[in-house]
Length: 92
Image (tube, rainbow, N blue to C red):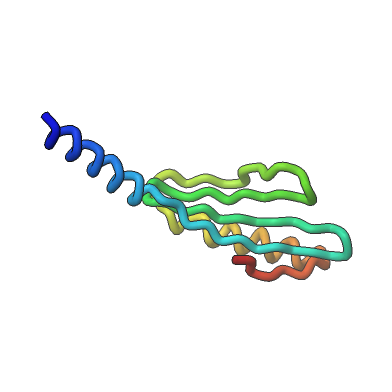
């Protein structure tokens, strides 16, 4: 019984590692106007989050099957912010 419990705990830990998220953030700013675009990726998909100022972020896109699908729309959105005069830089 003890071996079964230990095996279950190890299996859950491995699943948790597989579902770990990778986040990439770009911060865009013009004077006091600060905006943040974050791409979160995991084995289960990805999503793009957008925050303006101190407001809580909102989800712009989500793809459940392809973790790389968020990169292109996020880059296009950052390009739109730059066309509005904001300066964008990667933030780690």
